[in-house]
Image (cartoon, rainbow, N blue to C red; front, side, top):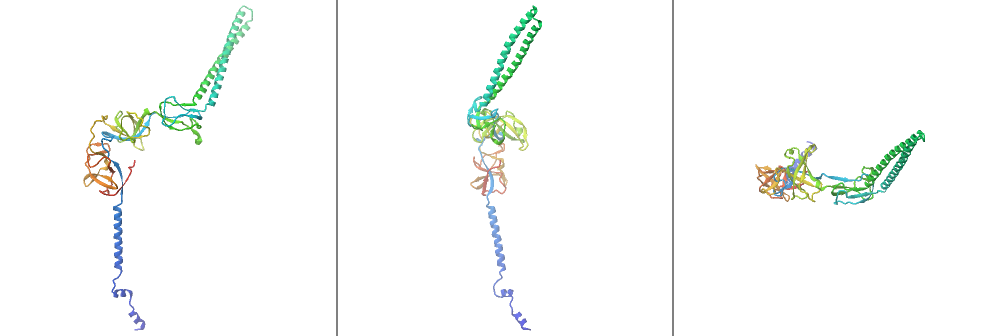
Length: 413
């Protein structure tokens, strides 16, 4: 055996050295540390998922005594509208010299709202009057001349009959009288035309004063002194087409959109109650005026006109309102049922029982309920387990459990 072979026999490899130095191999420790990290990461992910707040939508439970839909067969929302409303403008183009209105002013029919610069129209009126006066003066002149010519023709006719003048002279006198009569008639027509010009000039001059077309309240003021106003829209945005808007408050009513699937429940003259969003505790007696015979294809609704039986200064156009259509006119003496009203979508089944979730702070609380058979449209009566004002979760998700963290958001329209 050579020296090189002997040296190879004496060399100790790495795996032999680790096996003979008394220390265990390091790979089991590395594998164990990796497994521990995986377990910790999974636990952290489970903890974050289980403790993440669930986003929910809530609505307040209401008492039947304060709910305007008690006894209603259907509810719908809409807005207060005015059947008699006008944007007041001038019928001529001119510059405003006076604007006598402000928002909220009560005005009477015929009351002056604004004035335009009338200098040009006054001059045109004066010219028309002068022309008409001249025409009438000429009519008087022709009338006098005609009377004289008729007398002359009569004398010439008498003299011709006596043979004192030729018959031609009498015929010429009669022709002159007839010609004067024709000129008189023509001038009378001209005078009538000039009188019409005066009337037109007077109308244009009167248009310089803008008056209220009916009794009402000014809701908007759209023009100021010095601005040009015109009944026609002009380019550039420098010409106003209206001075202000006047609303007849006695013509206020409610327009509501009723889902076409439920329109069959609504009848003309059907009693109803209206509650303004601004005054939720104020019930206004109402009744159905008419069902508009046209459907909105996009919203699948039919518009219903509802009359308010009580007028009040608090009711103004474009206010939001909720209308409850009643089977019979409310007498206001019926005993309100016990409990609260909640949307039907807030009641779900958990473990074979009906429950609702109430948000308290940032936690969801499960409460078992027994809804009454009595219903109010889309609302259900819950006799117990809830109080008026409780924030009830709408359409609780299947993952929602008692004590879960929640985050509330406003219901979608």
